[in-house]
Image 1 (tube, rainbow over the protein chains, first blue to last red):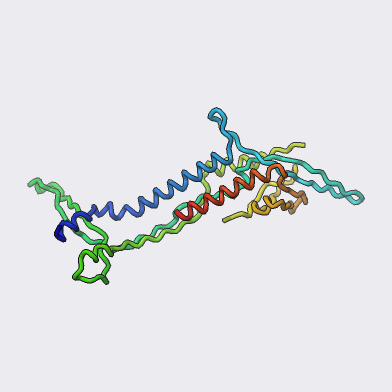
Image 2 (cartoon, chains in turn green, orange):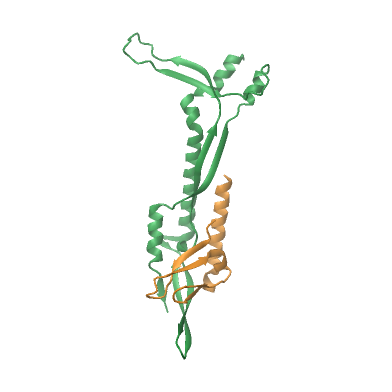
Length: 178
Length: 67
């Protein structure tokens, strides 16, 4: 295989090459959201006949009543949904920084019509350029050393509005029982 | 990881918030309301449920961070 053929095998549409890291980050975000939602439903809810009810845990509250002459306290047990106690946050890919040199390998005008009014369409194919420090004489080695630098920062984002509303509803409805 | 959270004080007419920490709550610590002095603590019957869920949650976060 000569060099030209070898390059053409590596060539992809420029727009695909540019979009690839961001598509990967979006897919990662989607997967993380799915796993968190799955965890939430499996550990914090009981399912029965397709209906979900929150798993409850019990807390006790000691209510100190102080007066000048007497100090009494009563112990009350109350229940609240487990979901309100766990410090949920949405983990996601926050920033993606991509850095690479683009090598244009082919540049094709797809307009085969002779109509001059029709706009020319150009399809460019390329690949991640080889690193500059590689030996000029060894092209195979140069291609193997092609580098794309991708920096990904994960972080927390605010919870989805639906979940926030659910948590707010639950926390405002603590059940007291004697 | 944000472990310090707030929960509404369950005492009627208090309308205040009680700060708590999940890990300490599992460990049996009590947390008091600044306004009415009520103290909350996890019931012994629920420690296991909360501990299991919290550990699974931490595992999930660690796994997702590694990916």
